[in-house]
Image (cartoon, rainbow, N blue to C red; front, side):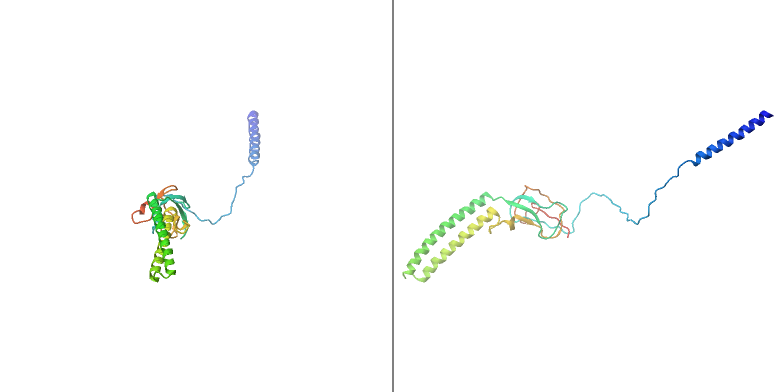
Length: 213
C-alpha cells in the first residue's frame, strides 16, 4: 500500500511540475505585432489592351506643291499638329528635260531682247532727229519692253524648275505644312522617298496627313 501511495504522490508532484513548466513556457512567447494602415479613398482604373486601326472622322491628304525627294520629316505617327505646323521638307530634283528646255528658252529670249534693244536705240536716234514718227518710235520701245519682260519670265521659269520658287527662296513650296489641326495617323513615306507634284492623279503617291479634328 505504501508503494501505491508513493507512486500517487510522485505522479501528483510530476504533474504539478509539468503544469508549471508548460505555463511558464507558454507565457514566455513574445507579443505578435500587426501592421495597421489608415483607409484612403482611391479611384479604380481598369485598362484594356486591344489591337486595331483608328478610323478618323475626317481625313485630310497633304500633297507637295513640287516634285522632289523627302529631305526631312518633322512629325511621327500619333503626333498632334495644328494648322500651319511644318510636317516635312522636300528637296527639289529638277527634271532634266524641263531644265534644258527652260535654259534654251531663256537663251532665245536674251537674243531677242538684244535685237530689240538695237532696234530701239536705232529708232530713238532717228526719232531724236525727227526722221521717223512718234508712233514708229513707240512701237520699237514697246517691242523692247516686251522682250525684257519675256527674259524675266524665262528666268523665273528656270528658277522654279531648279529651286521650286521664283522669288529667290523655295521655302513656300518645299516646306509641307499641315492645313488642319488634328492627329497624324499615318505617314506612308520616309526620308529619301520621291514625291510628285500635287494633281488629281497622284492622291496615294504623296505625303498624307490623316487628322482627327
